[in-house]
Image 1 (tube, rainbow, N blue to C red):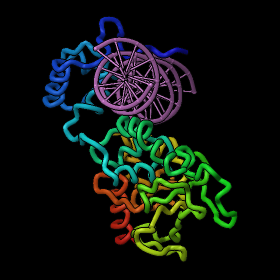
Image 2: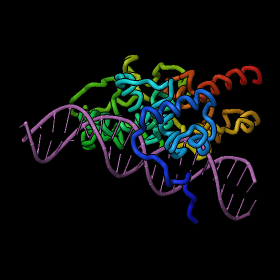
Image 3: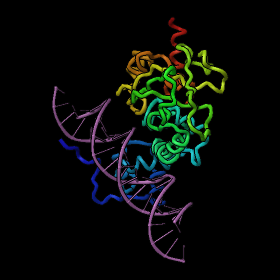
Image 4: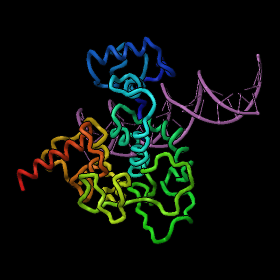
Amino acid sequence: MGRSPCCEKAHMNKGAWTKEEDQLLVDYIRKHGEGCWRSLPRAAGLQRCGKSCRLRWMNYLRPDLKRGNFTEEEDELIIKLHSLLGNKWSLIAGRLAGRTDNEIKNYWNTHIKRKLLSRGIDPNTHRPINESTIPPSKTTTPSLLHDEPVQFDLAKPDQHQTVKPEPTVLYREEGDYNNNNCTSSETTSEEDCVLNLELSVGPATTRSYRYESTRKANLDSIESTGPWGSELFGAQAGVCLCCRIGFHNESCRNCRVSDARTIWESKIL
DNA sequence: AAATTTGTCAACCGCGCGTAA
DNA sequence: CTTACGCGCGGTTGACAAATT
């Protein structure tokens, strides 16, 4: 069964937005907030479909957007998160304040892919392109979504060189997710603390993924089961993904939930 | 200087999911 | 239980700019 179009396409503007359209949208949202995107265009006096309005607002007009070039830190964070999450741009964007999924997706495709290739790393698998250079003794760890091993050296962001014979993927011990101290015997220094790629956060279940990305989270069920329910954070739930990879972030909902869990456990247990 | 190629990124499209009716 | 709707996501497109020939 086909779906009805999201809006009446006839008489709708398409393509680049004009300053006047931007102003109408901004004025309306300032006044009324983000509401129903479907009805917003008519209410705001725009000849645009709701999806187009939403996109324009989310990707360009939102006041909290960070403009300008990505920093080296952001680059590395994107790479880390991509190795864990794959092309889940909205999840990745959720970890970078002021950046949008679209922006990150574009940036990935135009810059980071090349950057990784110049390092000799396959941007899809995060593995060295020349697999034969990897000693068999080194274990690799499946990435979470595409079930491919992940390897890269984040401690050397600008190494334009062929991949070292020994990938410097380091692992942290289970139970050490809440701090940035590497405990692996292979760890040598703080700078070498890379990702714990043995994270057991599985591919987000559909529901948890939706929970993460939608404003209409079912808070009731969270309150009843606790925000750390396995459904939400995977089989070894308890600490959110940010915390696990060492990016505790106040703007991240799950980090806050993790905090709440800690408090809850300290009271209950 | 003109033509062509390459890079960038805003915007569109189609689909899946959750939910209300 | 079924269906339609609204939202949000990821993939793709295309216009424009910059670089190269």
